[in-house]
Each structure stands twice: as C-alpha cells, then as structure tokens.
Length: 353
Image (cartoon, rainbow, N blue to C red; front, side, top):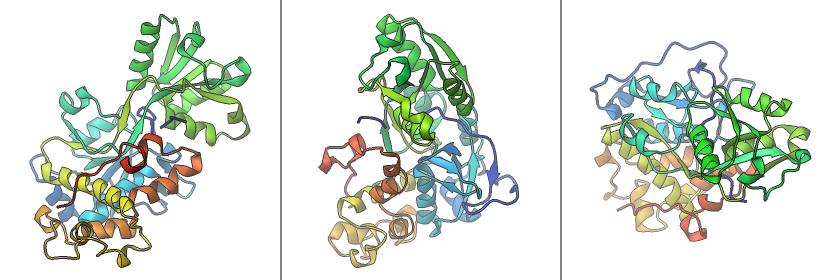
C-alpha cells in the first residue's frame, strides 16, 4: 500500500518544557537572537526548542500524561542528543499549520519537526531551509465503504461530493487543482483544525476527507470500529509530499547538524547498528568508526559537536528503522518509498568521510 506524514494536520499551541509528563505550563522558550549562530545559541541555552504536532498519532502526539511521542518527535530528541548529548534536552512547542512557519522565522523555535512538505515557495519566499526528507508521502482521499467507495476508487468517483480538508495547506491546493484537471466538480470545505475536519467526516457533513496518506491511515487506525469502514484511495497518491525538518534560512552550521543527524540514523540502519548493539559495532568499518567518534579522523568536532555526537543519537534514540518501527509500523504503515535504497526505497545517505 503506497500510503505515507500529513502536511496539514494542526494542533493547539500548548507548551510543555520537556518530553516528560507536563503538569504545569512552562514559560515561553527563550528565542535565539535573529543574528546569532543558531548552533551556538542552542549550546549556550542547553536546550533545543522544537516545534511539533500533538494530535497525529504515530508522528506527533501528546499522550494522557502530557508526554510528546512520535516519529517527528524523535527527530527533535535525536538532534538534542547530537548537539547536547541528551535526548531529553528538548522544549516542545505544539504548533498548528497556521503558526508553524512564523514560529521558525521569529526564533520561537530552533527546529520544526512537524509533518511539513518541502515546496518551492516555502524554501524561498518564506525564508526557510529544509533538511533531508524523512518521510516520503502523498495526498489521498478517505471515504466510507458504505457509500460505495473502495480502495481502487478514483477522483472521478467523487463527482458532486463535499470534500473536507485543512485550510491553508498544500492539501487544500492539491485537491482543488487535481479535481479541476480531472474535470470533477466538488464542494470544498476547509477548517483550520484537523479534529474538526475529522468530526465533519465522521458525522457525514463531508462525503470525503483528504490529506496526506499517512495522516489518513493514522486517523483510520485510531478511530476504532468506525474506522473499519473507511476506505483510502486512490492507490497512487494525487501529489508528492516530501516531509522533513525545517529551520530558518542561512544557519548552515545548525542545518549541517540536523542533516547529518538524519544521515547518521540512515547509515546506522544500513549497517545494522542499533541502540542495543552500537557499542559492539563502533569499529565494524572505517565509516562507522568515523561517524560514531571512535577514531581520530572523526569529523564531528569540525562541525562544532562532541566527537561522539552521532553515537549518542543512536544510543539514545536509535537508527531510522528503529524509530519507524517504534511509531509507524504499529499503524500498518509499510516502509514503501521510506525503505532504504537497498530495499527499493528512496532513503540514501551520502558517505560519512
């Protein structure tokens, strides 16, 4: 099944200080000065300010004890482990789709790790920089089997339907353009809160709900008995949605750290290096020895990091496959395009040398 994290799912603006239980509201995070080197600012602060989702199980979710968990949340933890040696040194900011980019540009957060699609306008006009794609996704539709829909349904099958989507996202634009190209007439209703989109779909106010395939799978999988009748289609998504981490433009040192944190997690998976065996695998080959700081020719110190920065990432958070299996495999999200290139996927890390 080619379904893959939603670019337009929003959360509230709650704020908690760490990824542990949140019992009181924390003070606002200290923003990085606009002209400061972002990596130096994070090191001096001793904490990474990270923007995440809080209502999308599997990717970014705040549980009943106030703990942030998920695939995107673990990237925040991994970057904190690389920079500060402590995956717990994260202050999370829950952001919705309308506020996430301003939070980056204002310095409120250092890193946005919240199911966000890399697009030309965001990479240029909005003043953002994107790291490696961590999740290859695509937009799909979800309707009810009882209404006659099935997994092989097409855009032509939604003629005359009321379609619900998140406002102000790539999701809204994609469905409008796809319907027009197919000559299909739809009524598009948009809402800024993803839960309201879901409520309208569940109640029957919308015939169809659209979003990134993985977000629809997440919603279906966590809806219980009602979700069993929900059908996701078409089999080939109507858009490309490469999702990944975001930071403010022109912070190349910080960007290099985020980028190579992702690459280190991919390289570790390639080599079978996990959080449980990393100590025994440090010298499996020269690349691993360099990347995990076991030899004098390591490159992490030249990046402004401790020599063992990426060792700490794997030890404390895990490789890419471990993070995927921890959060997304339970939702029945197959690796697909998100497999390593050796397994037919798109994930391919440059060499660590």
